Length: 131
Image (cartoon, rainbow, N blue to C red; front, side):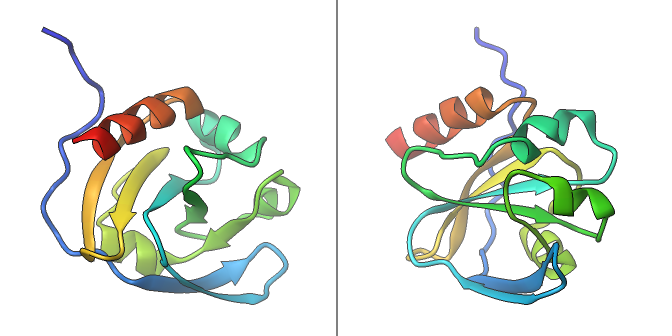
């Protein structure tokens, strides 16, 4: 038996996109055009550091790093962080770091879970894409 720290995806619809604000205070509007990974981060989260200190790439998919609320640390991140409490609500994100794999063609969540590293997200997304 293999223990997994990642949750089975809860069946639910996913939005086709989201709006938010970037670290410079600019309005951002995103439309999911292909399978995409949303990585949720929050202020003061040690486990989120790896996702903020690099520009994550995950199997050639679009990656969106999203926070529920503003924080001055987002301006120092190596990757673009968008503040979008609506996306957190729409994807039912309850904690961070957390990832959600969205399939915009089926408009549903196909994978999700609490994670601790970028390599773990890569493994889980690869597994979800195989299923």
